Length: 118
Image (cartoon, rainbow, N blue to C red; front, side, top):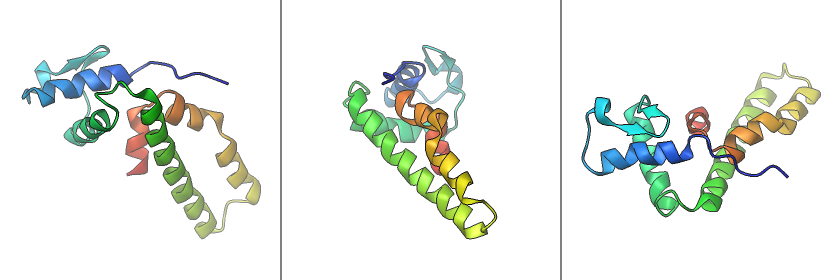
């Protein structure tokens, strides 16, 4: 069992907090890892995630939300693989067994995961 690893989640919450407080100048929005470099869509999505996770403190709930995003993304990719009929069955299995993908979504809560879903 690999535990949650804090890398960027706290910084994301800090970055959106600035927007929640009324600051819209990107040069003034910062988190623990530096300045906000993500587009406004990131800010709005992570504001919603912050609200859903009790101010970003309920990591278990955040992991459950990211697990749902993970499953949705996997379902879409698998559907595409099946539709093109070019990927062998063992290729589908590789996607499902990827520990790296699981790690990005559920153990690290990276913003890339939300971007991949959309």
